[in-house]
Length: 302
Image 1 (spheres, helix red, strand yellow):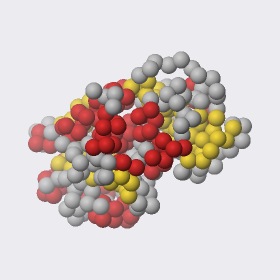
Image 2: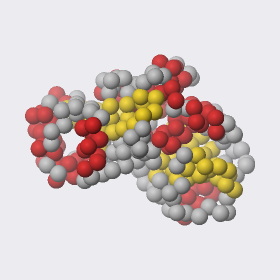
Image 3: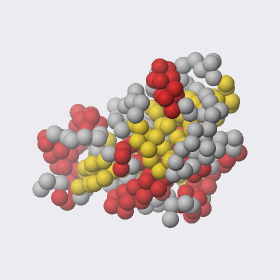
Image 4: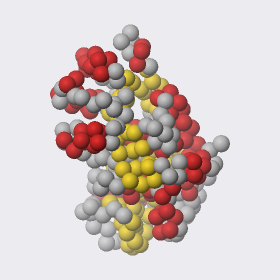
């Protein structure tokens, strides 16, 4: 079922816009793999790549291309420091380090291979470590950049979870979302997966809720949903989200820990007035990552 799902998805939605990148340029499903296919053939399914995750076009291309090609990925936040990269590299011995070019860490001790978009690729080790054939992603359980313990996820884990989320959130090819979290965090990764699988559109964003450009993007691209952890919703309340006029917004999702009762009631009340669903969920990285959700109609009773 999952073996050729990514390829089928690319063919099915080939001419449809998948990404609006950080420079406001459109990238279709049909073109998302063109650059990596041409430039990264030297990386194979026997390789491990340590990849710093960022909400940019280059990262999405790399992550999905590696998922398609069964390249093993260690996903870390783009802001990780040199000592953490060194520690994790010594433990897991990746073949390649793929580092944001904006990262100020010096990698002179590693062989520079080439640049790829926003990234520099370095050779770390030529040794091929035997791994389970189904391994696709190594992901930290806490979303912490410093953790050296990872959950092993297969492509089947990731795609099955994404398909189930699309079913219960009714995400389809007409849907548009915007990034609000690091894709190295399982919740952020899940949003990328679900919108790729459903043939919908992702607006790549690294701005916070405090920045006007974030809300301008929501209005300009008629964003239907975005996700957040409790901290995000605390910010939205301080910004008086109840006063916002966002007619395209259909639902908000929340995970990453429990919210206090007053905060939940605030969003239940203002979302009901705006005819927006506020959907609370529970997940674990070990489950790839979302496990359960509370339908909006039961939220007040709960």
